[in-house]
Length: 478
Image (cartoon, rainbow, N blue to C red):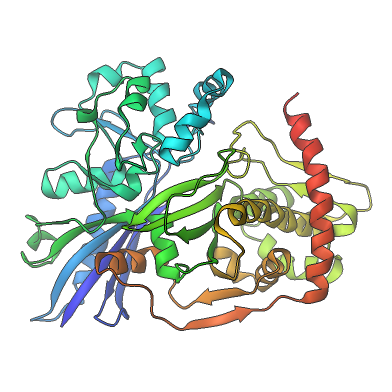
C-alpha cells in the first residue's frame, strides 16, 4: 500500500496524519510543546522541543504501517512569522520568536511615523506589524548583536529541515510571510534586507512548494530510504487548499485561539491601506486574507474573569443565547484585548465594552463578546471582498464549531451559509494536496444556513458597531 504523510508544525503542537491514496486518514498523532513568556510582550518556543515533537508524531503514525507498505513522501505545513537565530553549526542562539511575540512594537511604530511603511507592504504582501520576521529583525538589530553574530535567521520549518537534510531551504509560501521577500520577483528583497542589516546569505534559499529532498534519516523515523521530503507551504495557505476554499468567491474561516479569513486568488492582490496579507500558495495561486489576534483566546479570558472552573463558559453559551436578545440589550464589545492584527494592525489597541449598565448580567457579557469577535471579523471580510470579489461560500473550521450557537451566529453575521468540512486537519491535508498538485475532493458533513430575520437584524447592529468602533479607536490613540 502506498501512503503519504501530511505534517503541520503549529503554534501549540505538531500533528502528523497518514493518508492513503484516496486521502482517507489511516493514522494520526499530535505532540504539544510550551510557549514561554518571559515578559508580557514576548512569546517564545524551544526549537529542540518542536523537533522532538516532529520525530515523535512521525514515529507514532508509521507504527501502523504493515510489511510492504511504503510512504511516498512527507509534505509540510508550518506556522508563519517565526524567527530563530542560529550559529555556523546550526545551533540555536535564540528560542523561536513566534507570531504572537510583540516585542518589536516600538520599531514598527517608529517605521510608521516615517510615513513610507506602505512601500514595504506593497513589495512583500506582509502587513507591517510586530508579528513579521522583518519587524523582529529590526528589534534584534537595535537590542542585540545577533544581526552581526548569527550565521542564519530561519523559521521553524527551516530548522526542522536542517536537522533532517543539512540544508537551509524555505518555501515561497513561508518566505512570502516574512516581510523580507518580494512577492512580485519571488526573491529576497535586498533593499529591505539592508534596512534590517542582514545579507541574503543569512537567510535560507527560497524554493517552490513542491521541491523534494532525499531523507537520510528515514529509517530512524520508520520510513523507507525512498520516502521523499516535500517542503510544502504555510499553514494558512494550506488550510484554504485542504478545506476546499480554492475557487472564486470561496472564503476559509478559521476561529481557534486566534482567527482568520482567507480567499484564494490567481495573482497578488494588495489592499491600498495595507490591511490584508497576500501570501504565495502554489504556482498561479495566492491567498489573501486577514488574521485577527482575538478569537477563542478572548472566550478563555472571559471564562477566567467570570468563573473559577476551566471552560465553564462553554456550558453557559446556550443559556446566553436563549435568555439574551441579539445585540445583548445595547451592549457592544470591541475584542482587542490582545491588540489587533487585521483590520487595524495595531498592537496598542485595547478591548472595550460599550453600553455596560447595572442591568447587564453574565449572559449579556458572553453574547456581546461572541458578537464582537465576529463583527470584527466581518470588517476583515468586507476588506477582502474589496480586493477579491463577493463571498459565495464560507468553508469553516476551528474550535468555535463545537458551539452550535457560535457557529449559527457566524452564519447570521456574515450573511453566508457555513460549510463544515469533514477533514479536521485541513492544513495537513493541504500539505499532501499541494505536493501532488491536487484540489480537495471531499464531502462536507454539514451546512449551517443563514436565518434571514437575524441576518437583517445583525446587519443593522453591525452598522452601529462600526460607528461606535470609530470612537473606540480614536480613544485608544489618546
